[in-house]
Image (cartoon, rainbow, N blue to C red; front, side, top):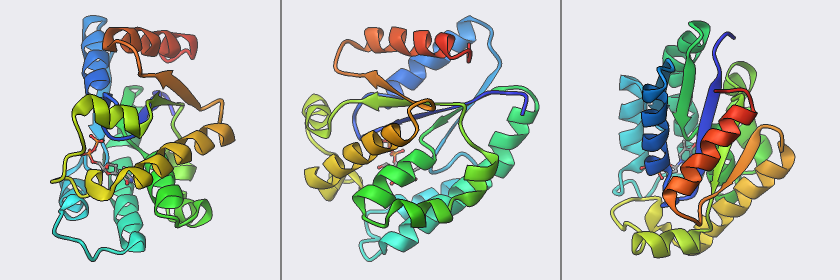
Length: 207
Ligand code: TYD
């Protein structure tokens, strides 16, 4: 495909939205043609699926159902947004992608990597990121920084043990795919993290 595809990953509260905003400002200032989207969501259908997944009243949702909903939201986003824009040669940035399913559903929920990969085969075949930035900050540090978990968010409210498993899941993914997944230290000032992100994107030939 002509364009480059990058994804941003990390645990809750690591400053992903802030870094995304800074990255978008940088791309605009430098006249780089890009499309930014998010998961779950990014298309009208995927946003509806997002509403079901993140609804805190859906307490009876099984881990399998959750994993399949994330995968279906992703399938739509890939076909409707990611692939067409890559074909046009654009830089596509996605806020979370299948590594979130590997970290949250495979490792933290315990569904296993094999199962979660099997329901994501379309993305693994036709939408592999050129680069994934893992915003690295432990859940303990992240929740301390944001003043505790948001109890209205079904996922944030699960508890620290779950989020530690997510963190370890990301670390394991990084060990499995060290060339694609690059860790970015998020414990310092946000301007510092932003500079590191730009440097990595330049080094990897994305910018
Ligand atoms: P969101 O409010 O977008 O969180 P954040 O700002 O942290 O990105 O909610 C997305 C939630 O969905 C987040 O808790 C991570 C979770 N998630 C998964 O568990 N699996 C997935 O495949 C994806 C894309 C997200």
